[in-house]
Image (cartoon, rainbow, N blue to C red; front, side, top):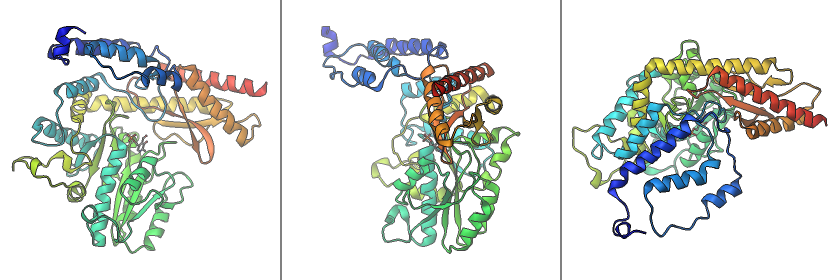
Length: 485
Ligand SMILES: Cc1ncc(COP(=O)(O)O)c(C=O)c1O
């Protein structure tokens, strides 16, 4: 260690070298992202040895060297999840403008929880939420807020709903808690997303307490909802899906909104539209979310189809009072001047928050509405062409129709029993992941093993879809030839 480093361990003049190093590593990575294997290339044990066993450094090194050191250590564990052939989960990538906005947000390091801490961040967020409501054809009178993802957007919507239902039942859930008060009834289907259940657990409503309507076609049937509501003389919370994660199915939102509207004691309709909300961007698929503007709250994701970096989601709520009562806080040291808009922290669980709005602002400003329409359109076309390829493949079958951007399929034919097809389908998933040309993930759909491919990355081209087909076809051949041997 040099004497000057000992005197002042964190050096102000290192901004340039540290940020230039970040730019150099990032640009090298991004320029070759579709050449690397899509999945990780090291085992958990290897990565633990590289990343978990280092002693706490006693002495420092320049930030640029720290960055290079980390990249060399972690590189085999990096997945090309923001690249064009990662079709696992529902991930999305990041546009150049979105990444640049995210970097700048770190550099200027604004606390986006409070107007006083950053008027620029507060007003930018209000501006992007207005843009997003317009982009998705949601009512401009709604209140919107950025979150860390759709889980927290579900949290925001369902906390507001819990507040609203509680007030109708005669108590203030945020102030008094749930204990000793009437139970809040939650209705959904078996397709409710795991994150919404996690939120119900966190909010004290109980992940196991949902009244689960049957959904033989993987969508809520409004007649079932009406029938159930007719037996309930209390206000309720209804959780609907716009884009179920396994197979991409949609609940009939307009009819569900009708059923909710006719429930005398009141119903708060929350829609989990983590990626399905983007159907609103293209006239060809807007019908899938028809009626979403009649909901009380909507959750969606930025880090999926908006292609901004992790983490970013958005929540939209009709009743601003229910939202603010749910997340109100009283702290003398945070008191703000009277002409300021409400602090963003009054609409979310956290207090201090990252300035996510900057990345969203840059992404939307750079691509414009038409850029996002083109991206969504391209992803839907890619999904449809892959679904057709699956349908035409002699040993594959769709597990469900692919209405938007998720294709769910499995091995079929050849006289295989369901159980044998399940086991081989899981092997196909592993074989595709190990191969590295493309990445898909597995699931269980209606009791049967499936493979899922989600299309929501701005970069994916028809050529990438061709490579996906090739990788899936080769995996099927190799698994089946192993099974025959
Ligand atoms: C329908 C749905 N809801 C919620 C989530 C949770 O989103 P996040 O991981 O952004 O919290 C997902 C994630 O895939 C999803 O598909």
